[in-house]
Length: 154
Image (cartoon, rainbow, N blue to C red):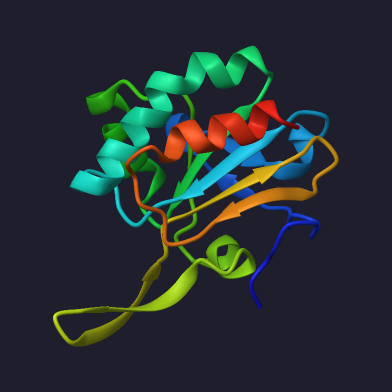
């Protein structure tokens, strides 16, 4: 079942880069941007993450927290974050639980082969934990600017 605007965002408690953890319910009272991406160090995911990095001061100015989530390990996130100077949380969902809760763990197809993977998706969650915007099958170009506009409109 896919989540949509107006739904309560499922809570999660995931390990993060730097040996930490992040729990959505601990961020209550502030907007949260969660973007699900397929894999560290791949071209599209690197571009998207670097665009969030570059816009992070604008998100911080409106008290919004950015969280990137993939199935990569926290150790992989450490390397990805260091290589690209990422300035926000990267969370590890190695068991796909959070991806499944948000409806981003889907069947994909490449070169005629079907497989399960993360659908590039972004959610804006308000300070009360309610989903206010959803983007699925995200195209990276101009996406971060759209997300920032949505957060500013909260």
